[in-house]
Image 1 (spheres, one colour):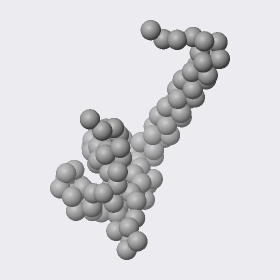
Image 2 (cartoon, helix red, strand yellow):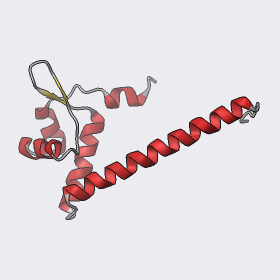
Image 3 (spheres, helix red, strand yellow):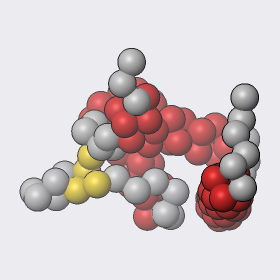
Length: 107
């Protein structure tokens, strides 16, 4: 199977389809974009394009909003998660370099 993240990250879905998939209104989706919770691409004509990962993110956002979480809190959580993922990736890269340098192989 092709790399799963490649199709999940490809921004090809229109806002109309996103509405159908998530149950959110265009206004809600645009509001989440304004609040920097979602980052669609734009076509040369200005239309928004979303990925499957964006759709999943929008559903998570909507569920949190329904539970009473504020958009500011969601944004802060997203920032923390990204920093954590970046730190983990950096740690793995350093470990890989050390393993390569000292000839350590995983079995």
